[in-house]
Every structure is written in C-alpha cells, then in structure tokens.
Length: 297
Image (tube, rainbow, N blue to C red; front, side, top):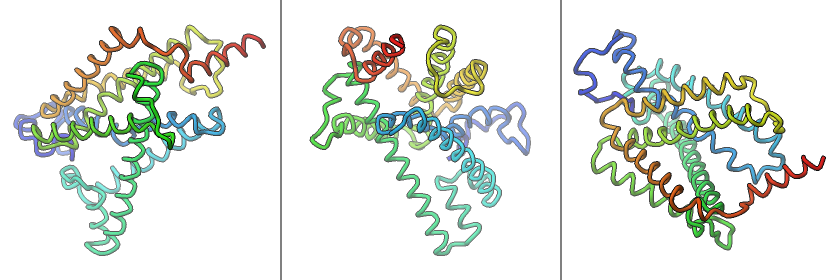
C-alpha cells in the first residue's frame, strides 16, 4: 500500500532526483512521509489514559518513552529487514507486507500462517486502542462543553457509549464514502488521519514553546532534553508532513474534506460552543486546585 503504488499519473514523467535507488525521486520521499508517520501515529493518545494511572507524573513519561522506543525498533525492523527479505517492489504494492516476509522465510506453511495471525492480533489491538482514544477524546470535549454535552453521558457501566457510537458511525460512513470514489480506502484514510495528527503535533509544539517563555515557573516533573529548540524542529517537521498529505492527487479529496471538517468545527466553537463551556470541567478544576495549592505554599 505504498503512496505511489499503481499511480501511473505520478510516474508518467521523470521526477527530480530519480534513480535506481529512488525510482520516484525526492517527490517519492516527500509523498511517503504520511506513511512513515503511520508507524508511530496514535502514540500521542496514551495520555488520555492519565486518569487511570496510579502515578501520572511517574508513569506517563515512562510509558510514552518506552512506547516510542518499541515503535522505533519495530518500524525499523519491519521497513528494512522485511523489505530486504520480501523485496521492495512487492512490499510496496502489498496490503500485508509482513505476510510476504514470513512466506519468504518460512514458505507457505503453518509457521507463516501462525505468525500472520499474531500480526493480525496486534492490528486488532491497535484498532481497539484507537476506539478507546476517540471515545475518550469526544467524552472529554463534551464534558468541557466544546462538543454537545449529551455526548459525555455515560452508561450504567460508566462507559461513554454515545461518544463511542458517534465515532464508529462517522468512521464507517467515511469508509463507505471513500470506497465509492476511490480504490485506495486504506491509503486515503491514512492520509486523512495523518493530516489531523500533524496539526495537533504542531499545536503541541507551539504551546510548549509559548508556555516555556511565558510560564517558566510552572512545575515540570518531566523536562524535555531537547527543550525549545527541539520543539521548533518538531513543529517544522509537522508542517512539512502536513504539506506531504497533499502530495498524491488521488488522496487529496479526503484530506481536503478533513480540512473542511476542521474549519467547520472551529466555526462551531467560535460562534456557539465557546459561549457554553462548562465553568470548571474536572481537568480544569484539578489544575486550578493545584495552582491554588502552589500559591499557598
């Protein structure tokens, strides 16, 4: 499911820097950035589980660092070793690249089938993690008043079922809509997800920079070893990747649709929800209490 696999319009003319090593030139590298981000996408959703953590200050940074290291190692092994075994062209055109690697090593035998099933188990787990993340996010925004407050109602099992159902319905409709106009549903959804993710990455970096300058006195149990310079680098990379989501023409309608949705949500906030925010959502109340305690000390 490579970004340029099967895209004749993208390969009908030679690209700058094209060679046997880079068949599509530097354009191919640029267009592949969203697919590279997909290796690590959604790790930033881990802090949504902060309320379930016993010691957020200690547990959350540790979990994020270990998670990033795990993803980094696995992504390098998958990209380099699997491609070296199965072949770059075959992996680039396959929807199941790990299965190709298993079959290249073990043949079409039971071992390959078992390992493929294990890989599918990981895929299903990540799918459930994303469901948890969007449900938690919609629930939190609704509880604070940014989205309709009815979405934060929980069932007798203390589950934000309305938020989960809404996310599932929207996701299913997007799949149906994209499949109607495109033959690359997975790649289109990938670029749409990355488009929203890199916007949040850039905003996090800019917020970090602003807080570092305006509130240097804030308690920071974990301090980034890269500091403000690292945040600037991260923000620039996020903006470059944002532009890369528009690189492949066939994926642009989905990305543009996502951009329109973001603009509509901004308008909804500006003209409606900002006047109906909950005075003190639980997260804000906890922050105010902590601030008051620091001032007393």
